[in-house]
Structure formats: structure tokens, C-alpha cells
Length: 461
Ligand code: AMP
Image 1 (cartoon, rainbow, N blue to C red):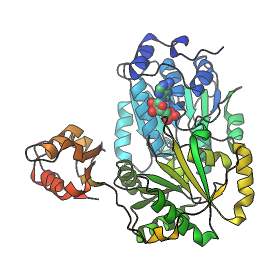
Image 2: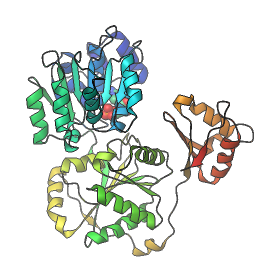
Image 3: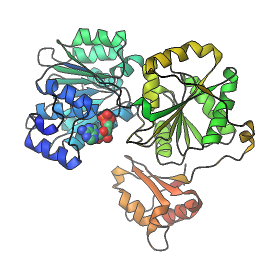
Image 4: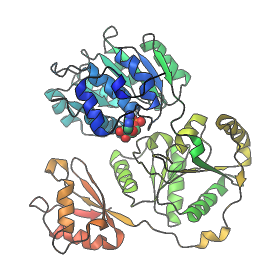
């Protein structure tokens, strides 16, 4: 019988101790299946999604392999998006927090190039980045991969979908084939993913785990739209009927994502779009506002939604069935995590009936079409989110910390602590969620008061 405790692995005592202090006792399926081979230095292909614990699977492998005293880039992790790269770096820092002087550096597009060059000059052990930016650094000679002995391709299918094939070829070509252990994680196994494995991996072990999200814990609802233009009305009815605090609507294209968000916004819904054509800054702000519950609805493409790090997504609406059924499972798996019951709606038209048959076969369950909620819901006022967001023009670089913001807001004659929501600090900006009715007062407190002994520009976004 397979052991599922971390203590059954040959991990160093400091790592084991840290895992215990993080509350990681038993391994998730992907960890128990992949870690033994990873720790033996084998190449591994693992099919696992966000939420399966895959980051810790490769993270523990890399921390065991790392020689901290050798201050060279030993591990390269490639991710499709900056949001994912940030999450991965965060998880690795967490897992490696008891290893002294370990240096993890993220190199992603959408961020200024200069400071990255500066950080690279200071050196690092682990690089987490997006293929485009890594390639730029290689081209400029600001990054060298000669000492990389562990290469990790995270969400390989997404990277290929996003057109990073040639960047990957170029990057991988600059690492040593003989020295290198290669790990690949992917939610799906398209032919292009297999081709990468064949080209760059050495007798890989293949690990597949069943979807971590037991679909039976997710209520799937199916609604019929008369035709494409009727879909939006169906979405409005569903939003008005269920009134979830946070909902993600998945669309199959960027254009449609933007159109649906614009139209819902015209109807008065609290909604933003998230897709790859937006500026990085706008994407950051959108995620901040959705995560801190100042925006109730996010209309997103599958790729963009990958970076969404939310434990409690209340509902998912599929504007259409995803083109790929594994993507469908992945979408609906974003709801119903952490033991909560998930909730997913899918809208189909007659033309998509064949997809429904495939989906039912895939999920091995029948899904009945339900009647639409009453049409008069469309006339009801639309509930606005409880929270709103203030942006402060100061962040980590200005040494702003969450406690400073909370202090300035709740200090003398301030607002109550429970009227303050999530606080997020970025390099040069911070964001704080405030209960909507207290927003103006909070804004005044922050502008008139002092934060770190100086005043920063603050505004509502
Ligand atoms: P990931 O799939 O890598 O995004 O991980 C999903 C979440 O599960 C992260 O928040 C991890 O911190 C957490 N996690 C990963 N492995 C374990 C474990 N063995 N026990 C408890 N939590 C875990």
C-alpha cells in the first residue's frame, strides 16, 4: 500500500519540520504519486491541475535537490502567466522558509526589465518566469542557464496554447541536456504536450491523478438559450436568481469575454473582464478587486483565469461549453474547493447538443436541462457588492505594510476593523477593500492622516 505521509519520504528533517508547521501532513494524490520518482532524480510528467498540490510536489523536489551554498541558478520554472509564476514563487518561499539564504527570483513579462537585470546581478538559486521574458533575458545575455540542473514546465499545455513553443525550444536548448532533470505538469495531454515530452524528457515517468475535484460535489446546472444572442439574457437571469457574492463567467474567446463584460456592465452589474489583451496593470487591478469582493462578477478566458487564486469561488457560469471537456472539468473545479459545495451553470443552445452528449459521457452522469428562472427577475434592482477598493500610491518599495494601512484607517476616530477587507501590497501600490458605505470616510482618513510618516495619494478605483 502506498504511504501517504510526508514522513514516509526521504526528505531532510528541516523540510519535514516545516511541512508539519505548515499543516501539511499527508500528501495529496499527485504528491504521493510523483514525489518518490522526483526525489530519485527521474523525469516526471504529471497530469494535475491547480489545487492538486502540484506546486509542493515539484517544490519539495527542487528544495531537496538544491545546494544553497552554491550560489548559481540551479532551477528554472516556466509558467504560462505572471499570476501563476507569482503563486509558484510564493509557495516555494513558504516551503523553503527554513532554508537560510535561499533566493527565489521571478522574471515575468509586464514588469519593468531594468530591476530584473539588477536582481539577476545579485544572483539567485531559483528562477520562476514566463517564457517570453526569460527568452528576452537570454537574448540580452542578462541570464545564463548553464548551471540549471532542474527544469520545471508548469501548465505546459497552457504555455503551448499561448504560442510559447519556440520560446520553450530556445530556452530549453540553453540548459544542459546531460545534467538536467525535467519535470512537466499539465492539466491536459494534447499532442503538442506529448511532443515536448518526447523531445526534451528522458524516459519520463507518467503520473496521472483523477480530478482532485470530485465532480459529484459540484452541482451542475444546465440551461438552454434559444440562440447565441439569447445567452446574455440567460446569464442575467442566472445572476439575478442566484445572487452569488462572486461568480466567474467563462467565455471561449477574448472578444466575447470583453463583449459580455461590457454588456453586463451596461445593465448595471458589478463586472470586469479578464483576458490576455488587457494591460498587465489592468489585469492586476481586476484581480485585486474581484478577490477582495469589490467586484462580484469576472468574465474570463480560461487562460487568464488560471492566475486566479481564490479559495471560495461561489459559482462558475459557462457561457458556452468549453471546447475541451477537460477544460470544462477544470473550470467547474474552481468552485467547491475546501469542502464547500460547488455550483456551476452551463448554457447551451440546440447546436451544442452533441457537446452535451460528450460531456455526459465524460462525466458519466446525466445532466438535465432546467427551466430558466422567471423572466421578471430582469426588472429587479441589481445588488451591488458590499466592498469597494481604495488604491494607495505606495507599496513594498515605500515600505508600506498591511498593518500601517489598517492602523491609519482604524486609529483615532477611525472606522471599525471589521469594515476593512482584504489588503494587498504590490511593489509601488497597495489596495485596501472597505465597506462601501464607509468609503468616503476611509478615503479622508487615509489622505489626511499619515502613513509611514508621509502622505500618499489615495483614490477609489
Ligand atoms: P497547488 O495545486 O500547488 O496550487 O496547491 C493548492 C493548495 O494546496 C496550496 O494552497 C498549497 O499550499 C496547498 N497544499 C499543497 N500540498 C498540501 C498538502 N500536502 N497538505 C495541505 N495543503 C497542501
